[in-house]
Image (cartoon, rainbow, N blue to C red; front, side):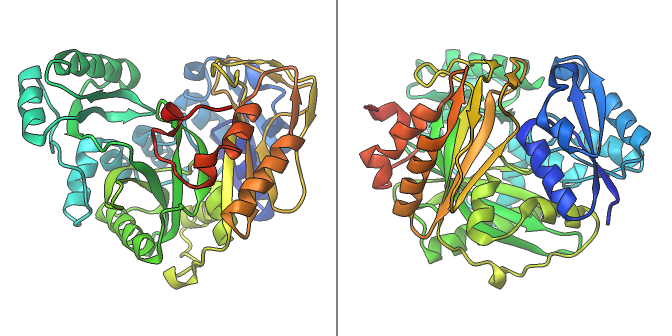
Length: 446
């Protein structure tokens, strides 16, 4: 097992990894930008190293600075968290060449699953269902028009290296396709340095359901059930829950088997998530695989009792999985609300000083956060400042528990999305489980 791990990240995920390491008897190294010198993860780690100015490109994305920090502190491994360099195969390779263990999958697996085209090709060979679409990048508008006609409108154009909704355009007619194609390519180039896009049939009003998998270096792969991430705004998840309200033992087994096949197709090891779209008839289709820990992993931990970050570290150290598939049991229901430093009505970032802070508590309540009273939320990074997670025996009880916890949550001095989440928890359609990815577009929050 490792003696010291450097966390190449910030905020709540850095603290989450630090906590897992402390419980495993592993020393930790925090890295931070100049803007993050007062962040809680810096205070909780055994050691800390400043890696540059506030801009991510000069700090958290600075590979040389991160490797130097690891070498300076004699860290044997690097945990990338999510975002930043967590899915960067080049960084994983550099770690490998420097004799530092990258806590994640191999660079080869990351490259295959990080490209939507190669990911689709890999899972097709394993019989994993996908939506009709191209198996290669689309090079021209004429080609795009021909493909869209064959598939049938509506279609969706996606960046092959994309994520977070960038480089993604829904097209309902041939007339709208040329502009959408050009815009998607431009966004893909600007966001990912790669303009390549592909086209697939657009699944209208689907559920976004994902399967958490764990794999080791000994060929063992299991899944930990599903998470429903359908409550989204502009393809950004806001609320996640486990299990999904549409799940049945049969559907969970089928999706879990497909996820395990997808991971096995690329010789995957460590934690990962296979994401699916589920239509109104409960047909599911592979969308992509995230080759890292995800923001919403706590809801799976709450219903399974499995510490996913601990299993990531054990797997990277070469240890076999401690669980077999039959050991995984889903107990109760868990919901996670992402608390962002944003205006609840306009979703505009609201950085600034927190003048009063009181997190909720009580049975079945978990708060993953990095802020505290008098902390100043800086404007340079993602606006998520906390995750509020609850667990209860049933979904109805989990909703009531979340409502109670949101009422207790006090954050003053900045605007947050707490009020937004309160309204969702009391929305009739949400309470009844009538949700899909268009939920926020079609409801009126009172």
